[in-house]
Length: 473
Ligand SMILES: Cc1cc2nc3c(=O)[nH]c(=O)nc-3n(C[C@H](O)[C@H](O)[C@H](O)COP(=O)(O)OP(=O)(O)OC[C@H]3O[C@@H](n4cnc5c(N)ncnc54)[C@H](O)[C@@H]3O)c2cc1C
Figure 1 (cartoon, protein in one colour):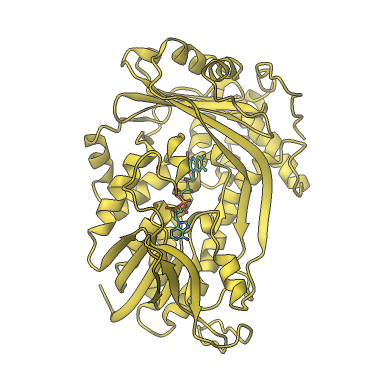
Figure 2 (cartoon, protein in one colour):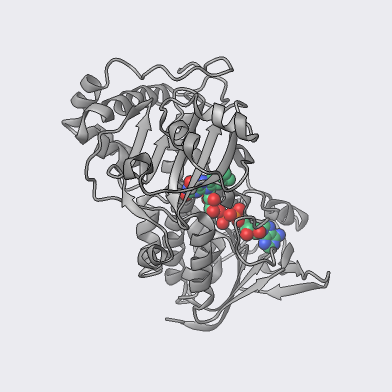
């Protein structure tokens, strides 16, 4: 329902975050304009989303939210060729070199390659009433109302500070334009320039938290025959406690999308022979055995990810009214844990709630942005702690290790081993990883004893790697 027909939101970026932000804001704003730098249609090689060339697992919580926002999405993707499977049936998930106990979990893996997912979401979002997508429009700055950058920002939305009232952008022909807005949403990804634009207007840029992991990806597509991997559709081989991992997923177009990963500088090579040799060193042989006999369709392509980054816009002093950051622009997580799209989807629900509360006009877009950043920070705390806490297992990852971090990591290592032997532990673990349950679910009465007892014996020794093995701390 549109309560204020005059309200206009501008969203910067039309990748997953921009599309989801536009989708939920179209319920409460009269008009939503998305500015996207890329002018091409979505393709595997879209410049603005190079991660589209690499494996993109959609966690079950993310799939459920996308289904809520775009009813029938899973069926539409399946009809477009995206296979589905159960998380532990028809799928092989290896933790610490051992396969998690195969069993029915009720959780679905929707195996759409990222370009297909984005194509469908883009079409469905652009078809919403009031939504307009401008391609080839590069945001170059923010517009303020000229009010003072510092001042009192009240919790109710009353503020004596200046506020953001629109965005500047350029067209592909170089023409510079301005677009007024009641709300500007930064969905420009982890490389967003919004902190610099805010600083240029005199506002304080957000504090940033970082945990560097120097992660390398290399990915390659292969032709898929249904008899390969015994008919299974997914293999995920987690790296920890070693540096190397990977995944092979059956995606639309009868293809295997294979990604190899290496932490802390131990990156997979991109020459075909090196790629295959690297796959032979993973903690489980399945990917190597698959690609050894499969027909490659593309050459391996690399991607480098320096580390998880979180911008603390929830700090009281940081963002002016009329502006909010969303998706990876707010928090970009180590992609090894496949949380990014699902955490963005969770943010979309928070934004929807905050926008609905602000739509009555008592706090307007000012209260909306502040409420969103506060609630999104609470939401992000969990996945951030899971991802960075896990990375802190490696001694050379720099970050604050509390006794709790060490205890949690020791317990999760046990749970990963126990998941091989014990279906209850495997189910609890995959539900937490899929963001369906909080990590504390692993501490349920009855589960702790099984985890500690059945997780004894430590992880299988990882396959040899060319660099010194990291040490768990
Ligand atoms: C290698 C890799 C693997 C990943 N694997 C997974 C996975 O398995 N599962 C998962 O859930 N997540 C994964 N992610 C994370 C996931 O891709 C993101 O969390 C998710 O897509 C949300 O990103 P975003 O839309 O915020 O930003 P992005 O996808 O980075 O998009 C930013 C958009 O903004 C546009 N843009 C940038 N600057 C401007 C500007 N000035 N003006 C206009 N437009 C602009 C860009 O062109 C782009 O379209 C992975 C990420 C990487 C890097």
